[in-house]
Length: 328
Image (cartoon, rainbow, N blue to C red; front, side):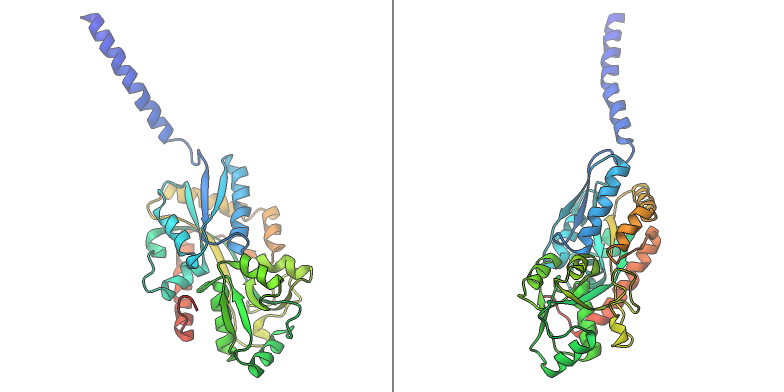
């Protein structure tokens, strides 16, 4: 009998050991494997640029690979949907932007996601101006010249954007509304493809982020007419006037931050927030932001949630005033 008990005991211990090991594995410090950051746009625009910058830094900090997964098209909706459907364990995070979280809720009446219900805000990453840029052959070189040209030739000129409902699109529509201009919108599936056509001269005018257009401005392949913030931005674009200098009261800026699926544990959200905020206070990281004429904008999860709610309300007014619809 004792041998039987011993064998049973051994079997019991043999079963229990893996259970204990499994429990210990579940408590492994986060992250213990690769983390994926979904960017709901193609490579090349500000959301992607800064997602990759932070992914590189987080990889160094966490000693785990952090990869960027671009899922562009559809106004960013498919990419956001992929983030919403991800397992809420902290290993799939999503880049949220002024377009996908600020504009889309009022632009799409049947939007399949709710920004502040289906996701937990982690922190904003960037807040920065957009810029009206033009091909060197475009007749206007300033905002005032653009206004004069567009008024003389209504409906003749067009501009490219990263897509319907993006910050680039709505910021240009706000400019058109305030300056009373008729300039045709040509939507692209992301800033990268639009910029490629601008550089090739296939389109002559574009609203873009400073981050993704800066190198082309610097080397003279395109020219900057005006930035969208109320005041001029620091170097290297400090010589570019603000649109508000010509159109009083005009002020717009894009943003890009990080969110997680709604059921992601708070301790993971708070850890990612703390690590990202620390990185955004690192002088070396701040220099990389400033080199792209963009400001770091670290927030707590609660602050970021309030920021998103306010941005949604702001763009709802612009969408209504301009009559903007998806696809135009």
